[in-house]
Image: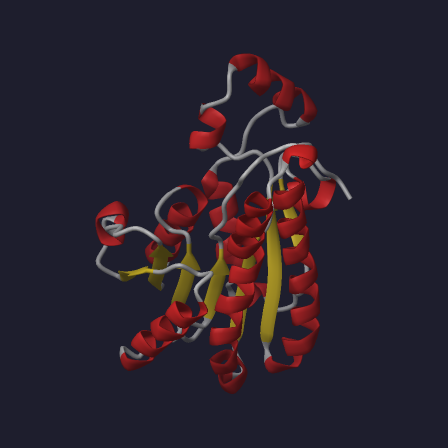
Amino acid sequence: MKNKIAFITGTSKGIGLEIAKLFVENNYFVIGTSRSDFDLRAAIGNENCLHLKLDATNRNAVKESHKVLTKKNLIPSVLINNAGITRDQLFLRMKDDEWDKVIDNNLTSVFNISRIFIKSMVKAKLGRIINISSVAGLMGNAGQVNYSASKAGIGGFTRSLAKEVASRNITVNCIAPGFISSSMTEGLDDSMKNKILDEIPAQKFGNPNDIAFLALFLASNEASYINGQTISVDGGLFMN
């Protein structure tokens, strides 16, 4: 990429932080967001980044962040929509708020962020949009109707947008992680871990780096003919 500036949502931990680290190591200037006053430079150990405190569900806040970056001449050519939440609950017990918050944070935020940055990509005739989905959006998961629906929606968003902007040298792809080692998986008891591992042909959880390296490749010139795809990174849990 000529303009090596990447905008990554949800960079305070896990997959988002790992993606930010890898992109900085590969000479990108990274703009990372989270809802907290997070010290991204300290976490990465590099000054070649900027943290923005941002609620991606707030459209006015998203517009203001775009104005700030425009003034700083930091409009990205790579956009990675990673931020997301879970509010797991059996469907019969699911409250309106548990549905609304997950859809807003996981799906509507992708619309909000992508819409604000894609105009500059179209003008430059260059861009990469990478959406972080989940294997739950492909195969479903009991207790995650809200989460699975939001992640499946990201897949449809990805394919449709890819068809609209492909002629402008912009690719839109989706990564669907499976079970990745994180604070969430660390909190599982041994019996639950073993049950999950029995369903994964690789017999192990993935690492955030597995997602980060794929994101880095999809952002590269070498991936310019990969478009509208959802790529699973799950050790063979879901095979299509």
